[in-house]
Amino acid sequence: MVSLNENLRTLRKKLQLTQDEFAQKLGIKRSLVGAYEEGRAEPRAELLQKMAVLFGVSMESLIGTDLTKSDPKPPVSFNRGRDVLVVTVDQHRKENIEFVPVKASAGYLSGYADPEYVKELPRFNLPILKQGTYRAFEIKGDSMLPLMPGSIVVGEYVEKLNDIKSGKTYILVTQHEGVVYKRVFNYLEENGKFFLVSDNRQYAPYQIDGEDVLEAWSAKAYISVQFPEVEAKPDVSVDQLASVVLDLQKELFQLKSEKNQKK
Image (tube, rainbow, N blue to C red; front, side):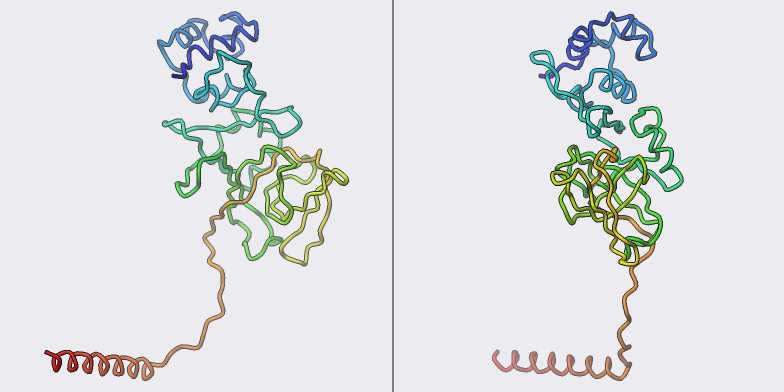
């Protein structure tokens, strides 16, 4: 059985930190560290996230994997090991879907790896999605029609750049282009670049360097208050509907008559 308190104690010692030094890095009292390591108390979700970042492991591993018998795995990282993915969890320790509206996209570029910033984002859950790490982004502009401006695209976290599949749609968080939602073609092995294409052909495709990508999220669902417009078919007249009903009534009467005759 996995013991959170033993994981905390083991990883702290591997970092060669005293309880007091560990407490200072977390901004808590030393007595709390002692309580956590002795199993007398459990840290809140936000504090667990800070601990996971400090230890260089995922929060899921910290809670659900025995890390006392082997070296912890390296942090789940996308940008060449520089940053650890930050998530929030609900009261059942299930990961939330954090929502990044358009007005927050600029701030997200500098705050995506900051637990304090991420926990301030709006968050929700979608039961229809399988277990995983998701984030939602509001898209702007009409470059990806028929998805309308203001639609919310929910993406699943992509751990490695090479896992991006050509022709699929992704939300890319980039240093120079900001947050973009495009159809991506992967040419990393050839020239270290991605080719980004809009579904609205009025927008020209362009390239970005793989090194420019901070995060990538594979599009899995979208939410919109605008329904797609469909060309209306000619209305059926009242006379036509009446004729159909009469025909059905006649067929039903004939079936009943045949059934009674067989009796």
